[in-house]
Length: 492
Ligand SMILES: [Fe+2]
Image: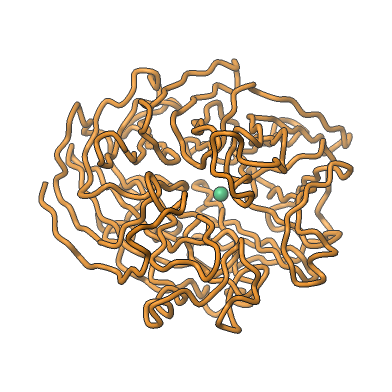
C-alpha cells in the first residue's frame, strides 16, 4: 500500500472522550489520506469497475452541550476499483459551518439534541434553523458529480467522485432553494439522469418537491400541501411518479410553538403516501392512507398495472422508550436502534384507478438501510440488501439479501466486534441479471483495530467477503453510501 497524508483537520475533541458515539467503533478521524494500490486479501474481480462512496458523521469539535451522531461533520470515504486494483481516499466536506468552526476552534451551532438557543451564531441551516449544515447524511452521484447532503435540509456539496476535490455547492444556475435547502435522500434516476428531491420546513408550505435534469438544471419545483410541519427523511419514485410521505411522527406542535423540538409518534393518525406525477402540479398529488408508522428509508417503488408499489422499512415501535438494555442509556439515542424500533421490510400498494390500498410485511427480520441495484431504481425489481444492527446501537453487524419475489433471505453475519456500512451494489461489468453484481462496504474491526473495504458476490452473500483490502486507519462507523459505475465518471 502506498499511503500519503493529504491533510489533518484541527480537532478539539477531548483525549479522554467517553461519549458512546465518539468512541469505540464511532471514534472519529482527523487525518485525510490518499492511498494507492491497497493490499488485497482474496480474489478482487477485474470486472468490478467504479467507485464506492460513503458519507460519515465524523465530528472534529465537541458539541456545545450534547452531541448526537447525526450532527457530526461530513467525511467522505472513497474506494475505487479498476483492473483488479483498488485505491482509497478520504476527505472532509468543507462545509461553510465546518470552516467557520475550524476558525473559531469550537462548535458554533446547536445540534439536534440541543436547544437552538445554545447556538452562538444567530444564523444557521436546517428545517428548524440555527443548526450547522454538516452535509454528513447521504451521498449520491448525479451528472458525474458526487453530492453530499444533510437530513435536516441544507446545501448540496459537490465533490469530484474520483479525486474528492471540492467542487463547491450546487447553485442550479441560481435557482437553488437556499432558504429552505434540500433534504438528504435525493434520488437519482439512472434511466433519465434526473435528480428528484424534497425539502421540508416548520412554516407553510411545509414541503416542496423538485426535479433537476441530467444537465443539472432545476426544471420543476412545487409546494406540497401538508396539515402541518412533518419530518420526512426519504422519498421514492417510479417511472412516472414521485412518492412523498406524511408520517405521524413529527415535532410536537405545542412544543414547537415554544421553540422546542421533540419528535412524538401519533398512533391515532394514519401514515399517508402522496403520489404525484414527476412533473406534476401541486393539485395533482393524490394521498393514500395506511397503518400508522414511521419510515426512515424506502428501498424502491415501481408501477404494476394500475398500482403503485412502494417498499421500505415499517417501524413497529416508532417511539421507543429507550435504546434497550444493551444500548446507551441516554434517551436521545433511542431512535438509533433499529431493533428497538422493530423495523421490518414492508410493501405498500396503491391502486390509482380504484383508490384501493393494501399493505403487508415482506419479512419478519429486523433490517433497515436497504440498497438495490440502481439500474432497477423506480422499476420492477427483486432484491434488496439491508443491514442488521447490534442490539441497542446504531451499528450494523450483518447483511440480509431479501428476495421480494419469493421471500427468501440470505444472511451474512460479521464476527462480533466487526461492523459495516450500507452496501453499494456494483453491477458486474457485462452482467445482465439484477444480482449479477458485487456488494461493497467498509468495516470497522474492533478486534484487529482496523478498517477494511470488503467485497461480496451479490448472488452468494452467505459465502461472505471474496476480497478485502485494509484502509490506512480505522475509520468511524458510518451509514449512507452509493456506487458509481466507472462509465458514469467522466474522464476515467
Ligand atoms: Fe437516511
